[in-house]
Length: 112
Length: 114
Image 1 (cartoon, rainbow over the protein chains, first blue to last red):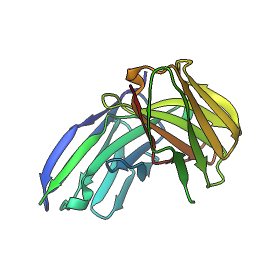
Image 2 (tube, chains in turn orange, blue):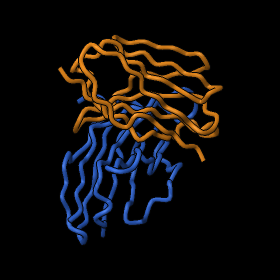
Image 3 (tube, helix red, strand yellow):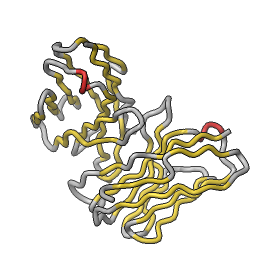
């Protein structure tokens, strides 16, 4: 059974600091997704990582994928308050790529 | 309207009520999904439709009944729900099922069962 674990589940950090959110998954998968969810809002797609070694960056967020270690990271650089949200990673099942298995989410709070 | 819309945004219902959730996508996609997001569990896939045909029922209790009359609309009919069914129900769509298709999510319906 494919499982996805994120840590930490909650992260409180000061503006200007750097931090990394980790996403581990249990079996081989073709794609890994990162989503952002603001309170009361929908999931917004941030990154889709398709292959081993993939790295994508958007603003202060950078995501990477190591398929051998079954690990993805979401690195936050010089955090700002606007990044406060819950971040989810998800992987698809290799034999049915539309079935996304989500992690529990990391609730990020960026303090002034 | 653009993207994926859901109505109502909030719903409170008793355990004996019957209600329906509606999802509409304006993206020209062929696949639509229902997800359940509970406070204490990761997001769970419930149903998948592709070209109006159900392709996935993830062991969902029969008190949840989906309907997909066309590729743009998806309903979730609710009856005799339990308090543990209280959750955020998210609809999503994608161009298709196979391949590198990203899913686009609606804003969700916050359901409270009393």
